[in-house]
Image (cartoon, rainbow, N blue to C red; front, side, top):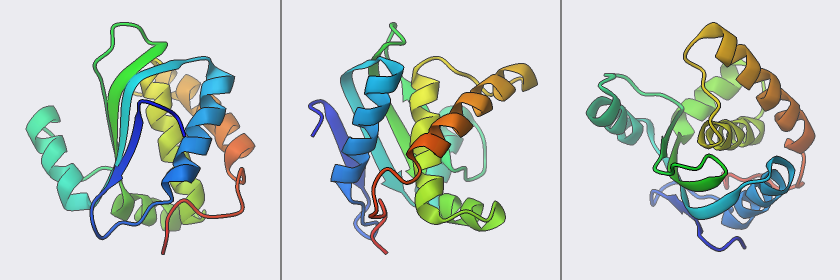
Length: 149
């Protein structure tokens, strides 16, 4: 288990926290970052919608929101919120299993904390290239699913 990494979820969402820790450990080794304090929180779409509306002024649900509180991109102090419901919808839309989509979102959040951005098309393409490579590398890192269904 990684010290200073907290994996949290709403009561009805069951996550294999050790697998999230294992994935972040692999990513930390490959991407060379440290964790001062990081929370990865699995929520439903209404929860992430409320966060999106309050803090980002967007009145809709989304699959992931990342907050970075660190001035150093290689030392994480932040929060990653992942909507399991939106992830499930994305997995159906893109014809991948839910575990792969959850892994993609964890990687996506980590890349945001590292300073990657996806607002303009050029930055989005750069981020997506790295994200796709990492998903391909780690999508089957463990035979168990992160989500307990």
